[in-house]
Amino acid sequence: MTSRQYPETAIVKGILAALGRDPRIRIWRNNTGAFRDATGRLVRFGLPGSADITGIMRRGGRRLEIEVKTATGRQTEQQAAFQNMITLYGGVYILARSVDEAMDGVEGALRESGAA
Image (cartoon, rainbow, N blue to C red; front, side):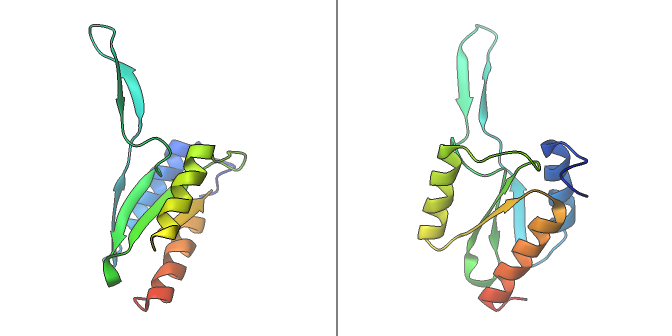
């Protein structure tokens, strides 16, 4: 699946399906955003800038974050700041534009941690 053919939501679903079966990691969708409730009040949820997919790697318990973008998508300043925080504290942050990029990034991180 390439990002040129699919919208971001389809790439996210593909990554969750492909990596969700890997026993070396646990991942889940991380939604952020806002909506108006029945009274019209704006309700925000999630951490601004956090990645689309979050999880943990079995070996060493390292935090795993995957930000998904289309071929032309760009990180926001908040997303770049979140990436810096995750990597500063020893987590793994992957910016993926396709399922293959996410899988390659996770494999690299697992090899680095000795879990591959």
